[in-house]
Length: 473
Image: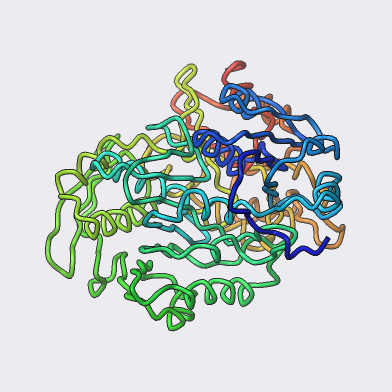
C-alpha cells in the first residue's frame, strides 16, 4: 500500500497508537480518550509509571509489537516517530489498508484545528518555556490546552484540554515519522511562536549545524505574515537565519535595544527577583523560584506572550510566583543527612554548562557535585568530545558515567567518558569515571558530606540513581 495513505478519515471512532508509552504519545492517547474515542495502544517497553497511568485512563495497552494487535480493525493508526516501516503492526496496517498518521498530524486534526496555537521551539528551553506559559495562561483565566514534553508540577500532567482559545505546543525539531522525515514543528501554523536557541544537536538525524539551521530556516519561512515570532537576542545562529521569517518579530534578552529586556536581577533564595523592560521602559518587577539566567530568559519570552494576549501585570506576577516547575528540571528529589539530591534533564553541553552554573550560583556556598550520564544519540557520539570539558567549570566534584547504550554507536564515532574525565583533570577539576551507576552511588555515599548538593543530569532514568542514593545516604 502506498505511504500516501497517511491521512485521517472524516469519521473516526477506534484509534490505535503504535509506541504509546512515550511521553508525547501517551499524552495524545489520554487526550483522545477524553474526547470519547475508543483507544488502544502498544509498545515494546510497557512498564510503570506510564503503563499504569494509561490503564487508569481506560486505555487498553498491548505489551510488544504484534500484527494481531490491530487485527480488530481500528479506523486510524497513529505511528510514533521511533517506529520503523519494518514494525509488524505497520506491515499489518498497510496490508489491511488502515489510514495512518503521525502524532503532529493527529494533534493538529483533533485539538489544534479550531484553537490559537502557541508554539515554543529551539534547541534548549522548550519544555520549561512552554510549561511556564501553560501555567500563566491557566492562572490568568485563559483556560488553555497544552501538550508538553515534561510533567508540569502544578498540574501533575504534561497535557490538558481547556475550553479557551490557546493551545500550547512544544515544537520539536526531531523527525516526525518513518513516512515523514521532516521536523514535527513543520506541521503547525502558530499564531505566536518562540525561538529560544539554535545549536547542533540530534547527531543521529542532523549532519552539522548548517543542517540544523536549514531546518529552522524552513520553519521560519512558513510562518504566516500575521503571526508573531519572539526571538532570543543573543543567539548568533538565529541571527544568521532570521531573514527567512516574514512575520512580525520581537526580540527578548539583555540587549537594551530589544523589545523585551531583563533589567536588574537579585537572588534572595528561594526567589529570583528581576526587572522587565518593555521597549526600554520599566514594565514590572517579578519573582520566580526558577534558577539561572537561562530560565529568566525563558520567563521573559512568556511574559511577552502573556502581554500580547492581554494578561495584566498582576496576573503575570501571580502566575510566576506560584509556578512549581517541571519534573526533572532542577527538581529536588530529596534531602538526606543535609545532602540535597537534584534531578535535571540536561544533556547537551550548553544545557549542562548553564545548569551547573545556575545551580552553583543559587546554592553557593554549598559544594556542588555534578553527576552526568551521556545517553542521547548526540552525547554518546564524539561530536561534543572537546566541548563537554568546558561545561563543568562550576562543579566542585564531578562523576561521569560510561554511556549505557554505547553499542548503538559505531566504534569510530563513540564518545569516551574516560577521555572527558582525563581532560577535566587536566583542567584542574576533581573528576572521576565510573563504569556503572552502582559504583557512583557507592562513591557518593563515601564522599558526599552535609551541605553538599548532588546534581544528577541525564535525559533518561539513570537506573533510578536518585532514590538509590537517597536510600543509602
